[in-house]
Length: 271
Image 1 (tube, rainbow, N blue to C red):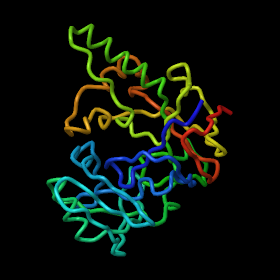
Image 2 (image 1 turned 30 degrees about the vertical axis):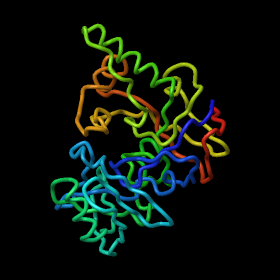
Image 3 (image 1 turned 135 degrees about the vertical axis):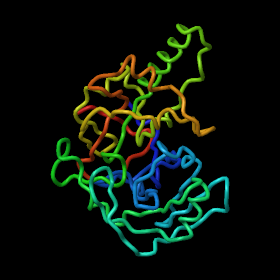
């Protein structure tokens, strides 16, 4: 197996980037999901509620975040040093505000008042102790440092979607792209679809990872990133073929054993 692609998302729930190599840190890929968007009361906002956030392209150059979107000129973001406790999926984390200019820029894109927050210290947020060790940390990703998906599994899922459409007398849709699932690492050559469900440990290049669990999927995967509208797939088809414990599943969550670097083309080994 080989590492087919690497993806990171500087601002949670905005557009991602495909990169050729990345630094792996204890809490995830370098610069991955260190920023997030909140409402006026400090509540976390994602593309689940505001699909238009996916029109925002965030880049990081030597530690400086730049926002690009269809509605305004690019904006370089400068956190203003004001911190507050924000509820990040059940854990209160001190985050730094990114100032009024960033708030105005994002509010115009979102169509409602929002603010941008920055996690300056990623050691603040622990991983769910049910799946991690006491020392494990995660940035502002939903729950775990990295998400791995497999090209073989996506091929199978798209085949199922096409079969379901034909059974309903519909035309088979265009295959779903992998970016719908917002992975960090995509592996090619796994052979059997969903073989990753059984993996316990994996090595990418020279970096070892623990598999915490299979990843349960939400409505975010149904958003067409060209139109920012929600559809029925892949949740409808995953519900038929990949549903248990009241959830649907695609991909696996990883925690790195230590820091290192990975690059596309790296060997992927099951340990």
